[in-house]
Amino acid sequence: MTYQNNNNVLSGIIEVLLKNGLGGLDKVVANFINEAMVVDRKKHLKLEPYERSQERQDYANGFKNKLLKTRVGELSLKIPQVRSCDFYPTFLEKGLRSERALTTAIAEMYVNGVSTRKVQNIIEQMCGFDVTSSDVSRASKLLDEDLIKWRERPLGLYKYLFLDARYEKIRYENSVRDCAVLIAIGVNKEGKREILGTSVKLSEQEAHWRGFLQSLQARGLHGVELITSDAHSGLKAAKQAVFPSVAWQRCQFHLQQNAQSYVPKKPLKAEVAFDIRSIFNASSQTEAERLLKITAQKYAKEASKLSSWMLDNLPEGFTFFNFPVSHWVKIRTSNVLERLNKEVKRRTRVVSIFPNAASCERLVSAILVEKSEEWQASDAYLNLS
Image (cartoon, rainbow, N blue to C red; front, side, top):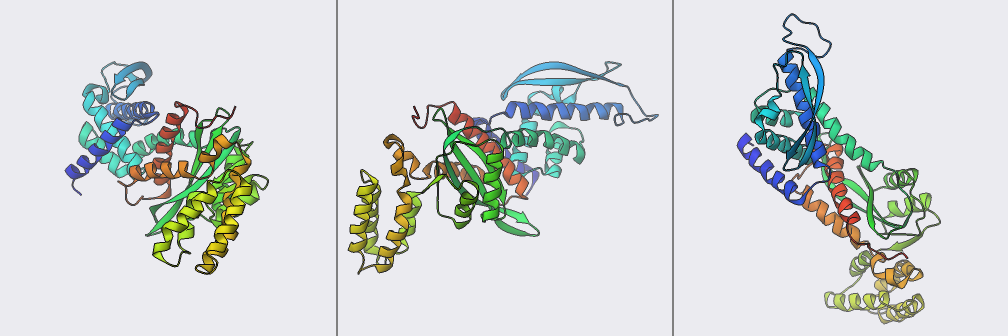
């Protein structure tokens, strides 16, 4: 792809980022500017810190604090100083052009991972001076630090926990693999939704889920009374190992989807879906169990496999009956996570294939930080009083 085409794509990405917002973007831009100004001073001095050379032009003399208002917020900058005062960072001289270049670099980081060569090329072409791969990598680490802090932040009491996984294509050992992106949502004591964490691994096997759940527990997650998820075997086994005493609600949406594979005739699908909805919409667990028996008998001859499957699986979707009626609609499915996954997919679609797992985790984390902050600023999801 030519530079011009690449720049057009990135410009579109930037517009999305600026339009939709991204929590902490001002801090990230400030980090990039601060790092770039240090690089600029090294170019002026013509040597690295603590390096001796006859080509030395001047001496570093600390930093001066400065607040700079930009389109992404007020930036807290540290302006590098030199003894002769015959120096001013190129980044600040170039103003808005530099800001756009940095935002472009950030967009590149979010979308393609820490691709030092690409970020290096963009800064060189748009800002007018050279940077090294180590300079870009150092700035990238500052970016990752904020996201790691979010993923490792302390947790607390959450009554409800929703778990789900989606897949992204990631390059791994010279091949492209579908890797599992695990996400956990909790409902805190104020009744608000909060994204607790995410993890990217090669599969959705028990070991991955178990490690993810244990990490949430180690960060202080407690007080969980109900876990809602689909019936993936790895997830179920991990839940039993880490939260053995916590009730489990099998997502009714997934149950409806699973049931359709047992319907022998296409004209019967709508009727089966209606019957299952009637069971789930019962006024009590006792009534749901009564309707289940009637429905299973109804299909015993025409669809015997469906009838047996219903008796074995639908009761796993009845756990929500043991919780407050006002909570039923929102705790009996993992739809809250399904909607979140659609938003993540919309934002990751531009990548197509991630260069590595770290780049995928970086972009997904950035999206989740933004969404979780949005939820925290909105009204309560459930009334827990």
